[in-house]
Image 1 (cartoon, rainbow, N blue to C red):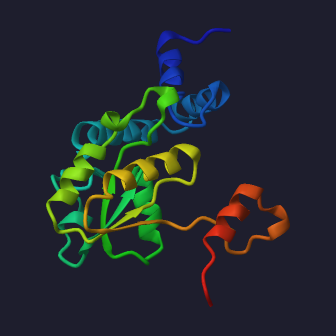
Image 2 (tube, rainbow, N blue to C red; image 1 turned 180 degrees about the horizontal axis):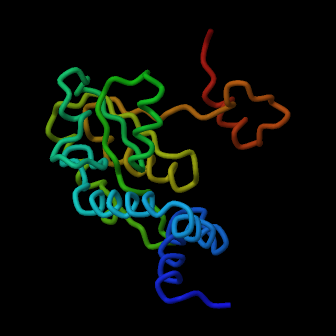
Amino acid sequence: MSFSPLIQQLVTALRCLPGVGPKSAQRMAFHLLERDRNAALELSSALRLAAEQVSQCQQCRTLSETDLCQLCASSSRDRSSLCVLESPMDVLAIEHTNSFGGVYFVLGGHLSPIDGVGPDDIGIQQLLERINEGEIKEVILATNPTVEGDATAHYIAEQLKRESLKVTRIAHGVPVGGELEYVDGGTLAHALAGRRLL
């Protein structure tokens, strides 16, 4: 059975969301149309407004509806410490820890030669320009602990070797509450390499 063109268009549009396959998209579409039209209209309005009015912060490149996001505009942030991340979601993750009071820079991805993503395709040049302004004393590379994330961190560290600043990488290792027998070898190797004195 095929759907009417408008229903099919809605189902197809919902499939652009991560983790949403054909069946999930159909369930969402039918739920909105059958049971909650007000929510459908609210969703449509919110999505349109966000798509039209949210862009990148001019300083850190996270998502913001103003030129400077709340974090960059705050006078209480330590501007000498810069945490480099892959995505705006990573900023939220770090902020939820309440353990970092510096500022951020969102690359907008990671290096991936196999996918054709090089240094010019993400925000590395803007990052280097920001660091060259001279206010930053430490750069914390908090890219994801993946092959691409590690390669991105290594590339940035190499670019900053000539700078007189401290470049650090977030630790990798055993998660809190984890049991060693269930942790993969690569994670254990990182944990052992990053051990510290007690």
